[in-house]
Image (cartoon, rainbow, N blue to C red; front, side, top):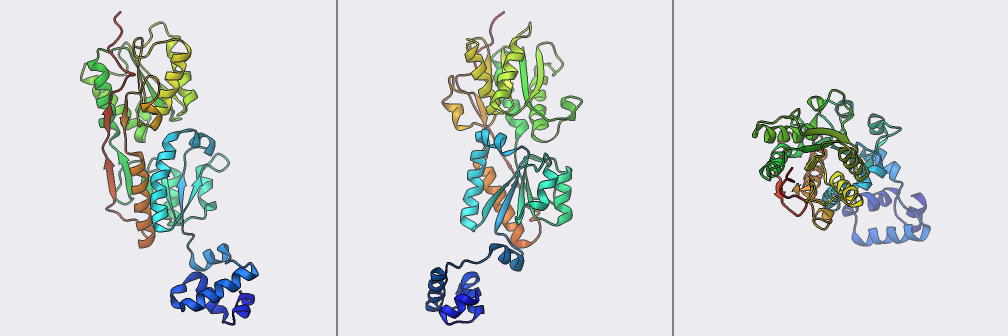
Length: 342
């Protein structure tokens, strides 16, 4: 910095202002300093700036899976597009923060960010408590509603109830519910967050026809939220003596894996089995057959979460009144049809 000051014949303070608060200098002075810096190959030290300002101008996205799994799911592509719109407008960069050595808790202290978007974690998880203790602004996405933390979610229960109701109206009574793997023991009663809410919607739809998840013909299983997980679910279900006439996947990526496996096994969809998803990824509309699914506003969810986080960072505390529950829409396409007659 002193070398630049000498070359431009200005003070060291002026050089600092040129890089950090140029509005306090005359335009000609700033131009002179930047030209001198370019000649010497000088650029400000970002680590030093962060220490001085205690700001990184970066948002963190705390992820529940490793990056290879996250990037395999097009859901996150759309989610990141929404976050990116806010980052570009507000002048922030984005840091993806997957689990460190298998632990999301270990990620938090090493991520140089001004705040976190926390995706898909329950409110009382250790990661959320750690963020509270460290005083780091954060926004919950697809978690649980609490007054003191900004949040963005969708009406999972309403969407799943409408989707399963569609299948029941088509006469389906042998239904396999393929949920996103939770890692919890004790079955669906111990699930949390969006997976539980979607299951609650399914239970409500079944109850309208006098059915429960324990009724004959109803199967519930968990698989990884991947295309391979969907394929594995299909093979497991199709190996049963009593095959389902409908497979309800809790995400499009799982449903697309089901369609892949059905196609490989020469099983006609929807003639032999109906298949549904949840998300409305881009591929859902041009898969073969096109996928009946629930559309959720993924991009909007990311954009709003980033906006709420930027406001919390500016206020140096959580903006408590920011809670948004977004609605879903049932899209009936070619992958569902009347139940196969026995």
